[in-house]
Image 1 (cartoon, each protein chain N blue to C red):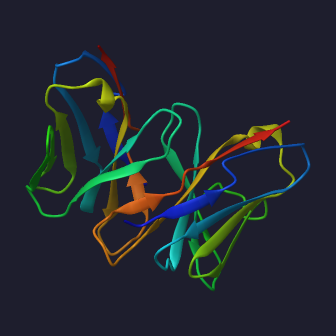
Image 2 (image 1 turned 120 degrees about the vertical axis):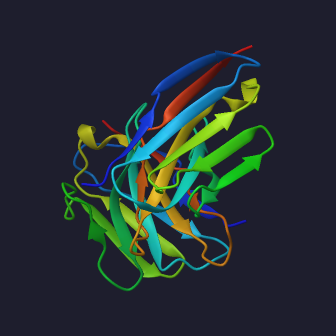
Length: 112
Length: 116
């Protein structure tokens, strides 16, 4: 079946260090979305990328969608303690499916 | 932005009883809603797709007679865990998408179910 792999599973950084999580799908995606889930909370939508090779920035966060629309990355520059949480990538498969296929997430902890 | 309201936030029930969880889209209509289950420190597992006015579509391995889904209106979907057992204890989350806006999927706040 369709799978979305995400690495690393855990990442611990010192405040101010950069952080990157990578997402790779076994099949071509229609889009890639990124969500953040704080401890005890629910996933919150961060961004959606649709175009092959697309790059988007949100302040210290940079999101990329691969040329083949199978992989993606989220990079955080100069992490802050407020960045703590689990970051999930998710995508809709091509063909108009509304189902989101989630990666397993990367749990980020930041040491102040 | 789009808001999805989920109730209750947490519930404790006895084994053998049933629990109903509600998911409402507050400011948009949702013909489709999704129900997920999340185990501690794990990703979201899609259980079923709830379709307004028709039967839900269940993922492989999810018992449709145990997890009853009803999507009676364009703003409300319910998940009923029937004859609950301790292994059903989990975090259940619903989501929907407001296609009018560029918000991705909006998730409810989740329901922490504990079966004792």
